[in-house]
Image 1: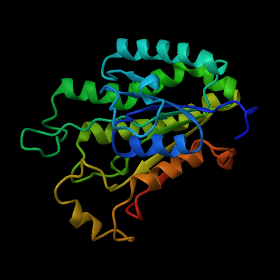
Image 2 (image 1 turned 135 degrees about the horizontal axis):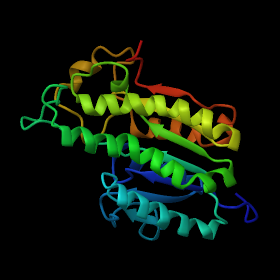
Image 3 (image 1 turned 180 degrees about the horizontal axis):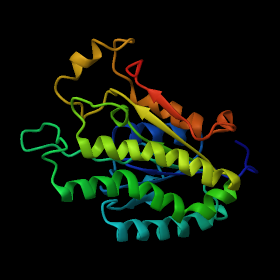
Image 4 (image 1 turned 90 degrees about the horizontal axis):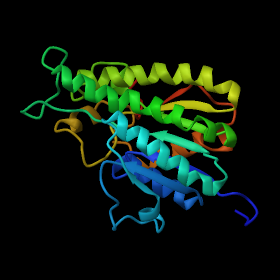
Length: 249
């Protein structure tokens, strides 16, 4: 990247672990400025030098806190001429019951439904709308992280999580239609069984049935996210890419 080219900027939620962590590393390696958002404070062990300066602690379950984060992000983007090249809505929550098992549609408490949808569904559109002008100025890209659980009953993912991800997949199509005339592309990725620290017991049995017979790597998901935010996918919008080793077939 030459000195004359403006630095590209990514805003990423759920950056502290797993897919989010791998995504930060992939974009940072390509020279992007990465503004991270998560419930946790910045971890000093993280590998990118600008991390402490470009991290925003935000509780996506609190709409007022999301609004505050949007204001903070917009302020920080003024340094880049008010342009945002990519927004990746990666954060998501999937509460379990007291035994650590999935919460089904009968036993999920209504407050849990509300909090899951706020984080997994409403926060992404709040951020995209709040940062619309900056995305439009950069002809940017939005990537929503959905899930294989959004299209089928999953043995580990709870009902609120699954339905919020299904709603997010539908929202991706709607956003692609609405944001497209302004030059903003909107796509989704739907990961399957990815090797992270939060895998549920019994995942090994699922892996035995996958066509590729292995877990996905967080770096593989990050590469697909990077593709959707790059010029290589300049005519791709309204798509949901399955990253699941063939689990959906």
